[in-house]
Image 1 (spheres, chains in turn green, purple):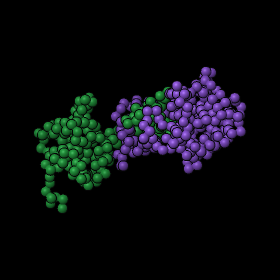
Image 2 (cartoon, helix red, strand yellow):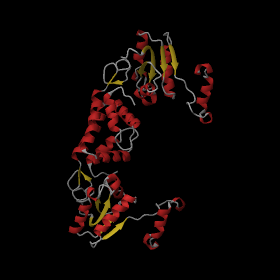
Image 3 (cartoon, helix red, strand yellow):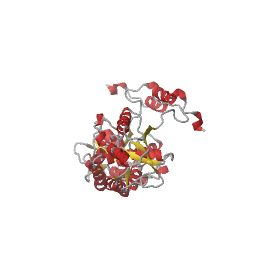
Image 4 (cartoon, helix red, strand yellow):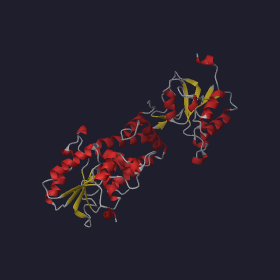
Amino acid sequence: MEFSSKFLEAAVNEVSRLPGIGKKSALRMVLHLLKQPKEHTGHLVTALENMSEHIKACNVCHNISDIDICEICSNPRRDNSLICVVEDIRDVMAIESTSQFKGLYHVLGGKISPMDGIGPDNLTIKSLISKVEIGDIKEIILALSSTSEGDTTNFYIYKLLEKHKINVSTIARGISVGDELEYADEITLGRSILHRIPFEKLL
Amino acid sequence: MEFSSKFLEAAVNEVSRLPGIGKKSALRMVLHLLKQPKEHTGHLVTALENMSEHIKACNVCHNISDIDICEICSNPRRDNSLICVVEDIRDVMAIESTSQFKGLYHVLGGKISPMDGIGPDNLTIKSLISKVEIGDIKEIILALSSTSEGDTTNFYIYKLLEKHKINVSTIARGISVGDELEYADEITLGRSILHRIPFEKLL
């Protein structure tokens, strides 16, 4: 791609570093910004700067927050004996939108992945263990995605928690509500039979 | 979508205003930026600011440029009696990459589209006509996309140029090189038969 403007080229290069954005999409976005009034670019720039400068992590659950202790952790109506371990803020948002969980979260910040150079020390696992050691936590729910990295991380945390007298559970895997059995993959279908639940529980 | 941080929410909202970016992609991009060192966001912000502040349009062809008269217009080796009319900088870049065109460009900045509130006065049509009036231009090539807006704009410019003694041409429409006839749409195939060219021209 040959550009008639160095500034345009620099902007396209920077935008195309974002995940999922190639050079052509980046050019399209940048040209869109150029067609808009300058304030639009100003708003975008200010929002990105503010985010970069002011966002911090909650001291307790490590979720993204504007304050030292996030709204979920500081809410006295939530059950602080139940902790759901998730990968990042998107998982917190997804679980919160179900309104089915009244405990607290613990955001790991990733999964153990030696291929990407992410070991246990790059995650907030130590902080989770010390929470268990000092607090009166009764149950830890592991809610990482079921990839090999997720399973490794689950197992690593499980091993560390073994000596503590708390329940460790994982979210249920099975056929999605509304899905046809014939289109389900074998592993999911197999697990859903293995982990069947008494019918009375649904009533 | 409920956010745990106002700054995060503002950044996601601004990024999702870009064309082709929904809230989920915007969140993914913003979280990617947060995971990177702060300098990355800094580079992006600086590039966007510079672009917004310093980019101008070439005084002659209205293409995006850092200088008053762009490199193509100021190049003495290009044929200034031949002008190719295009919609925006992407078309200039596409044609330039073919190395088949040695004339100059004229960037309209859009197509006549009453639905989007774009009339002839919002485009650089007047400047094109005055170029024809004062200069010694021999041919105008209309290279707009062949949509109804493109055809309207082509026809509008053609009518304005009718009284001037210059050739007005449009780029050839036909089957793409390497394409199978059976998969071509009827209009394109019909046009390619109607506008067939003597075989000797290919030799």
